[in-house]
Image 1: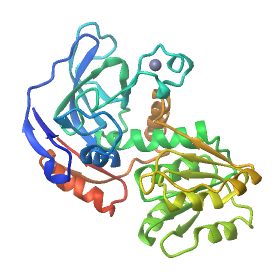
Image 2 (image 1 turned 135 degrees about the vertical axis):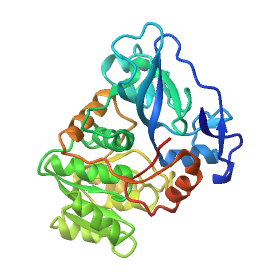
Image 3 (image 1 turned 180 degrees about the vertical axis):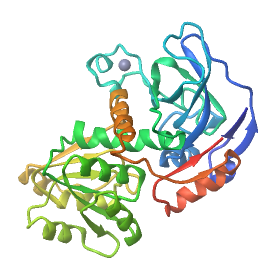
Length: 342
Ligand SMILES: [Zn+2]
């Protein structure tokens, strides 16, 4: 089969389209014929060698994929060739204190697609049957590949960790990104008042179509001043933060008293100054959020099947054009996911 791999860390030039042996499903595993594979910013960090994940070389990128079962390994029940599936990004033990209490995203011995299995930038992958999530008929392969990381991460942040309720005000940082645009959609259907920010007016216009109530251009406008104008000086109840750097501090300063900030990333500045005094005087909370559970992915698929949310696909590329796809992502001009279609 064809796989896009790299043998050394670096820029897009290290990616090579190679012919490799077809993987074989072992006991409890299935072979998935990949029909769509979404790019994530994590892929850039992995390729550059800055992801802080253990990466074995040569490496096949891609954590998010959708396809059909091509072959079922020994002892697999409940799945058959032809079933449309989306594998859960993690491989968990099912037994540790976190797995046993519904928090499998915190598993003590987790594996991840592409780090402990083959990756999604390929024609096929072998995964454990217990990690498969069925794709509803109403959702295409491209949409399924674009759904999991964006929407389930967003669900976990907004509702499970952030405890967002109807009528609250949420500020979504960087609404042009995959998880930003997903958060706008989920917060809107949950009945929240959604303020979003982005680096361009075009991205804000797109987010308005998805349910964003007010937009702030964080390059040209004073985010905190605008938030205070829009909230009668109170600030927002929840900040949805995944950017880091300056937007982290602007988010803190945009919070109402007793408000929450939930964080799942910090690509634009991972180590930031933190002013402790207004933080405790305002009795604010900063909450970490990591991945999501299989049940949260299934809920998002239900919402997509009912037409309540729309996974956004900006552009699709054949596997041979993986370099161009990554270059497009690194230019950050897209709105929605970039998807490889092997
Ligand atoms: Zn576990």
